[in-house]
Image 1 (cartoon, rainbow, N blue to C red):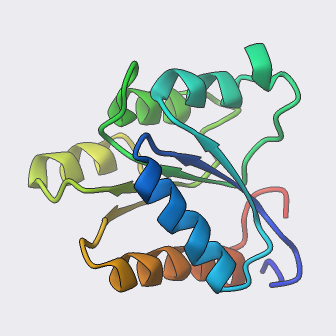
Image 2 (spheres, rainbow, N blue to C red; image 1 turned 45 degrees about the vertical axis):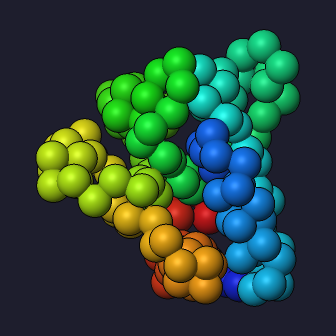
Length: 146
């Protein structure tokens, strides 16, 4: 089990600046010391994960928070690439998106998402959801390589 004192590397793939800000605030409010890396589209996510371009020195994330509706490559394409790659497939991916469509939920799980969370519209509920995701993956789950 990961200890709370051991920060983890989290990759947030999110194109909405407001959601990025709220996620950062949730981490700060919860005194979470984890390292949050942010990329704003599917291409940047893949560049980060494959350490290409400006991300050649990127660290391998321990957890990925992935929006579905992204520019360039959408989250479904990114998820499919991650889970089909033998090196990346062990990284837990939590789909964190506004979509509550059953087809998105089913497709995400068929693509081997580790969890699917619909972003709450209410600010406090959104912050709470992010905290719960973080607490689960930091204090309950044993992550690969940890």
